[in-house]
Length: 297
Image 1 (cartoon, helix red, strand yellow):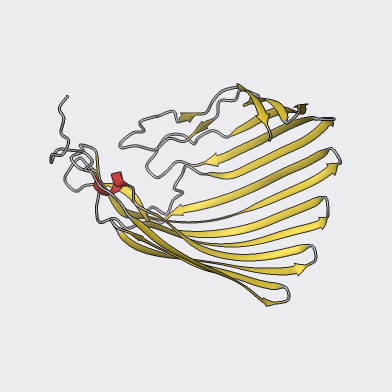
Image 2: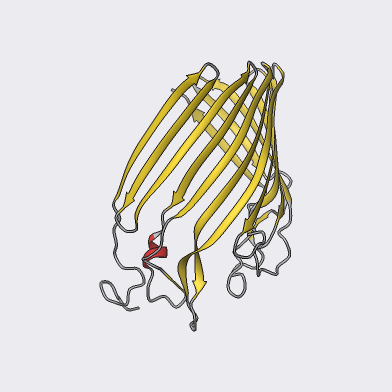
């Protein structure tokens, strides 16, 4: 081992970052059933510069039981120290000229409450993601260097519902869909699921006792361009929690089983160059058991 601290041979020099920001927001009730909330945030980073990000939400009380919202926002991700300053690395090197990633998103949402025990939500979204930071192969070399080389667009929607079916039983669920495109390859960028379903029940079957089963289904995850592995398998994940309140004054206990069915669930690993470093993806935990004691003061 050789200590290369404070020499030209370090992999990551000592750097610091100072951040200053300013936020301004206003709410304007410009008509009886209309409200506009608009804001702006300015950030100044000592290492890469500044960024300005607006947000706005237009809310219309369409009926006594229906609310409609149109929302726009811009967000950013600052480059990390490794992406900016990594040097002398035989693999990936940083780039001090990086700009932050930024994303513009537009969303249309409906909140419908036809009954005091029922709520239904429906929303649609579109996003534009620019200046993605990616490690790009260097010309004539074996290393890769961080660049603002990526761009991505996507759209999707979500349907959610809550229903208090009985005095002691509530049902909650949602379905979401999304589809994205890598603008450089005109293909699916991979990793994210196209479809997800979530269901949960909250059942107070006895005084001070509650059972909470829940299920999550994740489906249709594509690989990124150039990754020839077969698609990641879909999975259905089931949890069960049994909770007892008022065990003693201010005390409740709970027992949970996660991944009740013991499914082999995996999240996609990066494609790698030229092959994935974790070829069979990232396994999630198998069946596991948890106990909880909660004290309320």
